[in-house]
Image 1 (cartoon, rainbow, N blue to C red):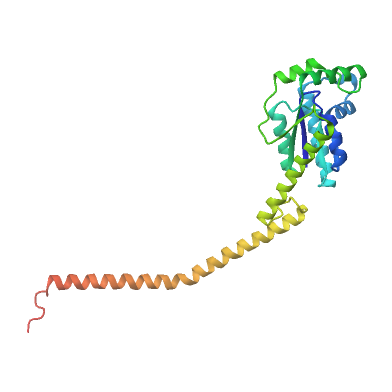
Image 2 (cartoon, rainbow, N blue to C red):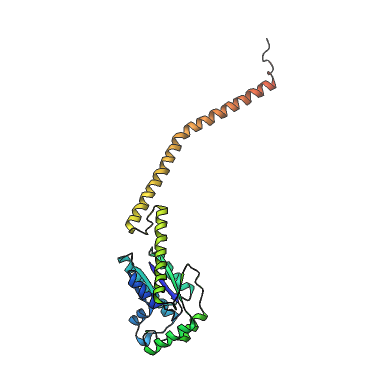
Length: 258
């Protein structure tokens, strides 16, 4: 499963992601950690272009980790996901990996956000150098409402309540996946490995081909009888019409003269 930690800076995304990962066999992929591991300090731009590049590397890493263990939960952290195209890119990647997804949007009051950001700036605890209240207002001004299904979590509440809300959301999507599989009676690459999904798909294809072939053979075998029936019906109708016309017109000259 891929989980998007969405929300404005300072709303508690990273703290929540750490607790959820600890309790759900999860792994956090942080945009800021990826960026600082790839680029030298003088190369860091904090631009959308660089953020998109780093997110693409995060998605490739997520694909590799999920190929090793498909039951893991990958948390994408460090990006607000303030633009819709950023979310669509992640959802497309999740679909290509045949993985479910969940959006957890963290919200918080501005007073709490301001206190958190000022505290992180003084302590230097956060790796992003541009993370301040001015960035919060800038991202908020261009925030695009998330249209996909999401779970909104108030990051100003106690962390235990936030974690419980996040875990409940993850359990909900897992239950919905199982209900879908049970309803369709097919693995659909959700519960089973891809090789079993391919095996079921081939078997269903063979059954459909056998049914179509049998139906075609039956139609071909029955076709002569059907044709004979319609030919006889046509001949009978045509013969009756011909005799009726002869009776109506009477005998020709020289006929029936005795």
